Image 1 (cartoon, rainbow, N blue to C red):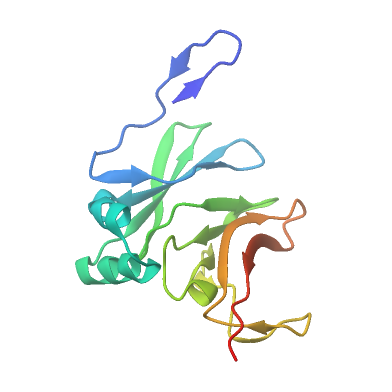
Image 2: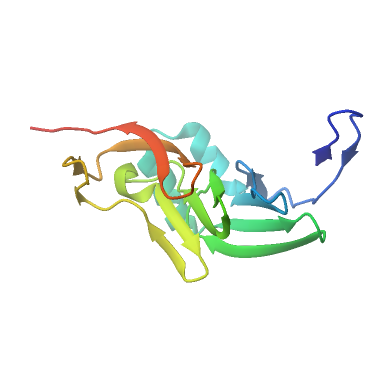
Length: 168
């Protein structure tokens, strides 16, 4: 829906089947595109009862669930599926100045440190973190706990928070 902040009038932009649950939406910086991650709602009972992030990742694989990444063109009132992601996506954002690239997450995935942050464009998708030593000389590990990714305003980097799990 779209709501006019002055009049309170609403407009329905799209209606989706109840078989999906919606993650966080994102508007491109040109105001033309609205990005909607539509995850398979069959994962919700697992999410409510999960003991560990691994539960979600395993259920997505076991049930072969996907998240439909849908784009609404607000200028032409059209809808298209950009791609289907084999994971639970809840956060997705267009890159500032480059709406053909999308930063997205795998929610409640495992291992979090390497499987959460992803980038998509017309050439496909790729994870943004790899095991090893980062530019600051710190170890990047599958055991890191990271979340809440966003683009920096200039679109050159993605920001997130978390902590490194250090084991002896």
